[in-house]
Amino acid sequence: MYERKIPPSLNCGLDLIGEVLYGKWKIRLLWFINEGNKRPSELQRKIPDASRRLLNMQLNELQEHELITKVIYPVVPPKVEYSLTEFGKSLIPVIAALGQWGDEYQERLRTVILERLEQVTGQ
Image (cartoon, rainbow, N blue to C red; front, side):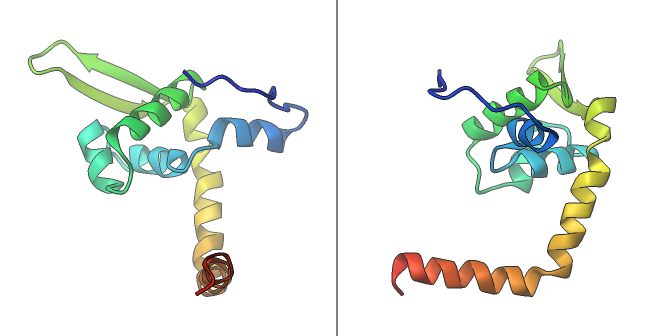
């Protein structure tokens, strides 16, 4: 299990948000669960670049932060579904605003990101 070398800074709202949402796929997981994609296989299909192990780790962290709940149905084979808590639902307008900002500035952001990649890789 990962153990932090430096304790998290929890002095302001941005620090707290970063602590809860830090992770490549967490925002997308919350968004897709909100859209109704609740089963792990559905989430995996929505985010094919992520490994199942990483998605499970990030789903567990979202659950620990009380943003989602996990229900395991007693059937064979086991059925698992995730859903947003009320606390998690309160994040959806924030995520929507971030997505809208990204859509509005996507050309500029794409250019900046690609230029940075070219500098780093020397291409």
